Length: 209
Image (cartoon, rainbow, N blue to C red; front, side):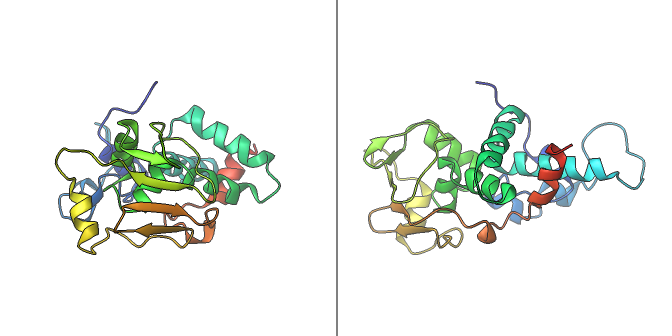
């Protein structure tokens, strides 16, 4: 399967804002956006007012980079959202938020969505008692996500969670049982709770042309 293998900090610099793709590092002075303000590349872009299309493209790329999906995958998500009866933009966010790698991140099992994708791919989580190693797996209301216990070393997130130090607030559509390291999907994602700052209206306009 194709995947992005370049430095993820380049994606933040290309967008021009922090997308928090590297977890804790994004909160320190080592963040690439803090150290290097200009976009990646050898040529310094001319300062000019971006076109309406460029603004819409930037927002679409921002959503793609945030959730770590490729162009073809993102287009499939948009087409699936457009076929639903609700608001297309809200349905798109709900589909992206329902990815298993994102749910693992939201439950504080991982520093970033990229790390969550790696943990899921390595088979460290069960969904309803069955091992799932597909990061794009869509969770549903009532699903139970459990850390797969092993005899090896305990990851840092287990120590932090058991000490009552979650990395981030768990959204209301999820619940976390720290004692058993189990997450529950209470209901579908609420787009109003998504804190990524993505303007889905611009994405809908981009694909509507």
